[in-house]
Image 1 (tube, rainbow, N blue to C red):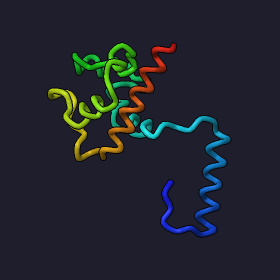
Image 2: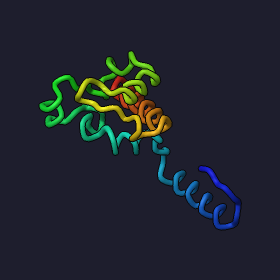
Image 3: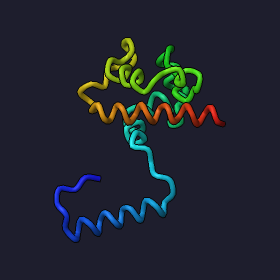
Image 4: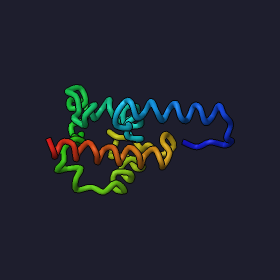
Length: 118
């Protein structure tokens, strides 16, 4: 969180949010929101593309595939997000900030790691 000025209202809200996050369990990955908004419809909630996406995009990759994603660095995933892939996956440059792309790439790596452990 970033605060411009400190006042009792801001401090109270920060403390309330902190307490809520602790009570709700593990904190959500910053990239999860970006992934849900921009990636989920094609790559699926857990990184596995739904049947509709598999039928529409013949070369679509499973982001939950630990073998595929584990070979990639976060920076290489960001590069894909910046440049896109062929005509099927458009560039996210101009749509997402560098920080959002980085957060999504980190989350994609987390998806693959979860699949490998399962």
